[in-house]
Length: 390
Image (cartoon, rainbow, N blue to C red; front, top):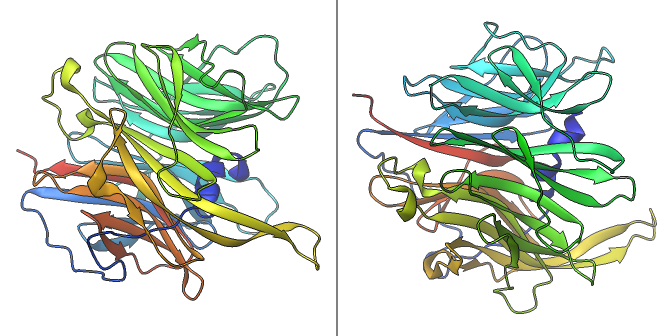
């Protein structure tokens, strides 16, 4: 089950190259704390271990059961920090199990039987809700309000072999759950539910399409973003807007690129709760690179021997020039997964940074300056910036 829910994160750790056009990409400046705000950055490292960085203070998850792989985070208005993920058992042969942490402690006030949840959000009424898979006779997507599971309607006429739930969002009294599944032919097919009703979505005209992220725009309108396989067999980034009902390919920004992916999409209401519906903006997080593969004479399997590229942010369909980064050296890889903006209007991006000499590490960028989190083999996957409590 862990392989199912960590698909996106695994792919993120294998992609994309970084460069700052304005700053030294090797420079890791100290972070100046922003008065009155708390910055939470969640991520994973090692094989199945997780961390939470709170205003530069690093903490870990300990449940005396096994290693914990964090998948999502939400913070209530009262400051309670919820992190959901999977516990890897201690060599007893059992399957990974879901666990919810509240303020760094296993949260046993909720009892989720037959659940494999991977997304968490705060409803408009302040209660937590989770989305994932209901492990009944037929594994299927579901939502948990408190301890009650509600199965989501399934698409008809498709033999589904695997499910992936990648997004959950609440806004203005509406709910969005997004993901994708694998059909009998091995094709990736998007799946979106709005207010627990299945919405027909075909962003890229029948192409094998992965939904990596989604957000509500206004009312029941939504945007999703991800990647699809083009005719050459390479992944291309896309956005889909439910109001227009069409998917839009995001063109390559770097010369020579052959792969691009939209790993995140964020609505500006995440950091500006007072915006009117019509003025909200959407930000898609694009990673892009050139990848070349060779066949290993030892294993007979393909391996990536060359890569280079960059990443950037698309706001309401237009690339933000100040976010376009490209690293000049080969075999240097980075990914961006989530973003936020603080009260000083500084742009935070979180993801991972890899060099052939130092390996892969969780990282974040503030207005183009990279900050490495000193943990081996992982990625930062979620950021939430909260104002001071009144």
